[in-house]
Length: 379
Image (tube, rainbow, N blue to C red):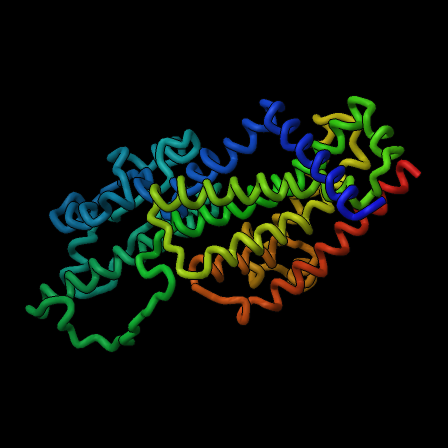
């Protein structure tokens, strides 16, 4: 069989895969939804804490205690109740009517006026430890500002001119100077979506052949196994890359003014490489699943540890030593570094070659093992 004859048959099978994909309305809807609504929704999420529900028990009832309460204002805190008895505190926290209680003790103004330390009690609902930690940080900042304000009044000088020893920390934030969380969160979600689609689509294509009983016909056709693999993978790579382009240019750029500082063509080229290599996991899933619902469930089982070990949920520095070493087996870890490096930092291939090499080697292993399992299943 000549090379051109093999190519024509492979292209014919690829056309069939494109047609099958666009005829499958459920799968088409999943892809469109994940590259548009899912990525956009992720960008609207904020890691900051705003309007944290606060209740106040003021036992001092003085102008200074009321002044302190006014410092706990939006956007960080939202006053939900003014308590009159400490027995109300338990109900406010247990019934989730407030997440933080500010208790101002009797004699607060007297202690401050005399220059002695004055106590405050902050009771925090620690059920959501991340939110509680951020809200507690807000409290420390507010109380520090209040202290400087009162000291300035006693000394007759503005707070910024007080002779208080301090460090002159001049922060310079690169790549995201306004600390726009939407850029990081939406891009992270997009990279996760690319990972999901790159595994799900090849697996679904193979399982669809199993459900229809046509996989045996493909195996006895004049096509080689690698041609069948390419005919399944290349259309899915094309669809995923087009979806990524649409997500960036039609969703993230217009909605969040996402900067594209590096070579966008290089990013899409490496995205295609990532999808092609990661599709090996899809082939592996297809050897274990018999139906599309099973494919989706197995895809979730495979992807969960890959995402957890990528650093998208937990920074690598915060992981135990042994778990940080395991991240080397997650292709998404390398893709995250590549994506953020190119789009946010403007890095070139000369600064990302280690990530590209790691992703390629791991991808070749995954693709090779998936192909081996597929051939063994029908040999």
